[in-house]
Image (tube, rainbow, N blue to C red; front, top):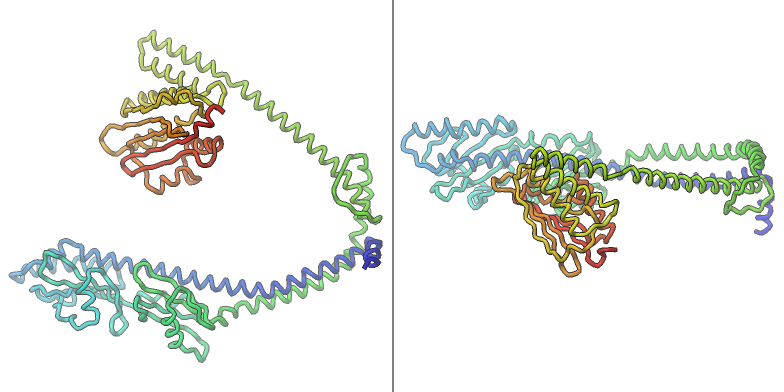
Length: 572
């Protein structure tokens, strides 16, 4: 083995390329061919299974939509006050009955049937004294012998059942009225073939679909299997006996889905041989491509051994020209062939490049630091303060107290906001900054809301990151009080208290409030409140993930946000 290694090591570079390329190339090609043969077949079968599941899910969503529309139509009838009143009264003459037919029952049923073209008929069965009216209103005695009568009589929830001949789907419900002495049962007859028609076109052939009710009785069944020897009854019995989610049945791929509108289950099934048949042609193509690749690899290795060496020799000569550089690499290669010379020169080139990169990065970082300092030096808040002072003086001279107050508040707000470039401030200064902002907002809002303070003055000396409360107050005013729908006065409450080793700030408004989903998303990436998220992330950056903001809200009543930070870190 040692002699073999020495022999290979001292071979000419051209022969090394030929032997190594041929050996290394054949191994992955053979492995890839074997893997492709197995994996392609598996993936194609899996793809067809996914297509089967997607087709069933799409069909179930479509059927659920239809069933929910029928249930909505039934609810429209049984909760119609005119209908309930008409079926609960006692009729003394035919004219009143006629008015009930003309003005209440017929228009409502005609509207529902015009909106649902698959509804064949709607019939009310009643023991009221009102005379029968075609197939729209009939005596209750007509249905006492039906299989579904007892279910309808003992319940008030709409339910579906199949007609005896299987051509119609009945939606049945009792119109319950505790003030009425009469029993009224409504039956909506739906054309089953039209309702389930789309299930007949899920695939071109070789599939079956079965719809079972809550009692595992067949509501609908369709099968299209051109192959001889297919036992339709056998697969139905197997599905009924294994009515679970995606049951495993030999020789069949079965997908199951449940209807949300009813307690029905749908099963879509295809023979495994049908699902896998589409993979056979592709597998043959893959194997043919693998064979072509093997031939190409053999030819390429022979050509590569002759062609590649010449440019490598030229490259080695060119690399020798940069030997004055200070390059360094970790690759070690002790052979005396062309690759050895290449790595020797490349080592020096990399070391030189590394040195140049370090110099460029350091220079860039230094330049950015100077640019930042230059930008910071350009920020001169004294110009803003002097301008506001001038405005205040002019306003006092002119007797404009509102303008004077606004200028003073703005001066206080920006002085505490800028904080001489410092990132921390005291609780007292932060509250003063927030108070200035709130007063500005009250002036801008024509004093349309009140402000309540509940502050523990012993917290004034604590140090906190600046600009924590102002974004919370701004959010409460803009998104809470400004959208208040109730007529009472808007109230904004700001509190600050110690709780053990914690400092707790709260901002409470009686504005529009938020839904539970909005409340959960306000601190996440789904929220548009950049300022709120900024406060939350700053607090967690300084103190840890267990601190920050917590929102509670009730839609229409208001919102409360609590800011919690540890006292033990204050001043650090």
